[in-house]
View 1 (cartoon, rainbow, N blue to C red):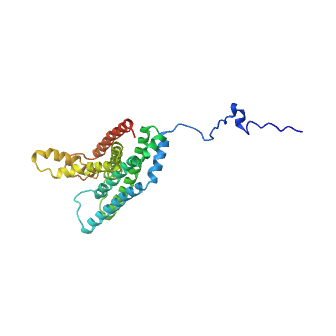
View 2 (view 1 turned 90 degrees about the horizontal axis):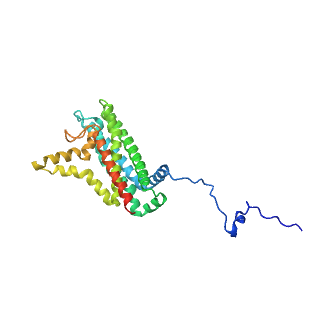
View 3 (view 1 turned 120 degrees about the vertical axis):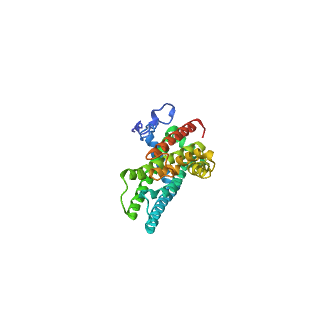
Length: 285
């Protein structure tokens, strides 16, 4: 009678383990340290899969196109003289309203995770809080910049075609497209930072709308001579006036001009993001 052969070790890995304990399992999936690229991929999946992104950016595109083209058509129908103002400056009104949509999305990019409790899952999967915030900032900034720049360029092309006449200079076009895209994206970064600090979507959105509109509104009601200096300052450095400066059309004759508004907004965004990093690192979720 033939004795059955003993099972091979590779068929039963636990056979060679003392005490009959289960054998060690090694995953075929390579194990490596998580990187910023992984965090960016995760944040891109989040931002493109939620409905708020589609609605906010979709409304912004519609506002920019509708208001920009309507203003050009009305001026063309009325045969109004722009008095030397650049044609692309008509895109200002649509961008100003569209900026509210970018502000909303910037706050929701992080504020919605706090309101739903998903921030705990995010920080469990990626314990490096600085990496999470950096990934959110990169993904949001690039998305807002691309959408705003492309839409502003399309509006500028149609406005020039509708109104005819001379073509605005290259510097005016660059500020009215790329400059405006960078400015709105930086404003959105400020919103993201405020959302990270306040951790309440409605409150952060309210604060940001006040930042955009309140200085200009306050300046309009400053009638006292003693407040003239403050009134001029609020006019010059209000976000609508700075945005108009990128188009070459401002409320005041003094104040930021050319690329200066963009540099100021980038500086504000840097300070706000610094505060957000500090708050995220030192406060519990």
